[in-house]
Image (tube, rainbow, N blue to C red):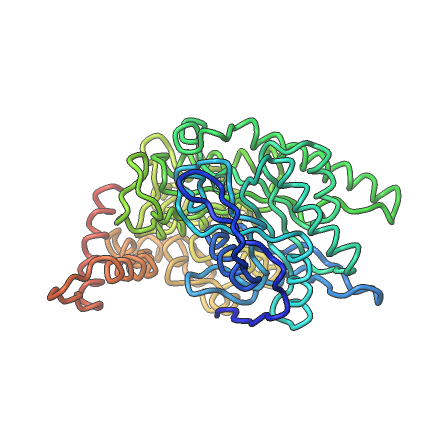
Length: 474
Ligand code: SF4
């Protein structure tokens, strides 16, 4: 779905271009639609834009409201959510991060909104029901503080002049002063600071103007601000809220050489230390040619990104620890198995699990049993012993779970006579992995005169190869 809107009432804008490393300000007029095209396009690589967690009803004086279950309901062609107006305040940048489309040394069309223009645009879109909130980010124009001040002015206009009570997610700029971060936190629902790369070494190599300390300091400040605000809200019901939807961050996957284990350990550390709501992973899309980056023809590692999201889910809701999912011997996730199945196959000594007796935590570790079905099992088994049919009714995916559980009509004897390891591996192979693989192949390999392979045959062959490979490893 793509937002296509014509705006014809704004002409008082300026057009600034950057050529050969120098800023040139011309008289050419860039209308708001052109700016929107440039700045929304520049923002599309930022994936940290979910909006769950805030409940605020309209109060009769302003406009808008937010719902705790999230407002994201539309996705662009590349799968990114666009229900928020996702835009940069400007794409002029004084930094030169090698992986970035907006870096200083790139010759791309540049634009900047004035705070009033962007606030008006957001309100107009909201009134027309095109969007339900704003996701505001920016390149670093001048200095971190200068950029933050302009972003804060957009939020101030929205909240105080237009009475906008909808959802706002704002990016803080690394290196900005503490007072500005605090002010932004009082205006936005969610704050985020992008960690960008998974190690300090990669940061030095690909984004030399950014430092680990400069990124982590605002994260720490936001965490402390949220904790203090929770105490204030207990004491004073009407105390202003500070970033009530918490904070998140984004990490680029595949631009540098870190393993999945390094990324996952860092993710776990961020959740523990800064109580982040989400860590978003963004498969690196080669948009610039640079010797320090993967080749421009390298397909974005979408399957890897998908596996990391699955593992992230296991950390947050299933009680797994990063070091359980990957270790010294296995540094990266299996492409053809989801992380939970992969863990289960490497820890067969933990099974079978008796669904009628085991703990909730043990249930969560069984492939095919999710958080909802584990809760349902715990409730249902109070009324009597559960059979395979009961489990199916409770939402358990038996195709996977049957290899790891026993229940009232599937005891130890039948478990011992279960299919051999090869059949289990075949049953656990993730069909989505082959879909990803085939799609990437069709997207990146077809050349003149070369026929793309038949999908069914290709998938059957790949399944056979993947199962053989996994069996050798177990
Ligand atoms: S600071 Fe942000 S916008 Fe500027 S080059 Fe780096 S990643 Fe891109």
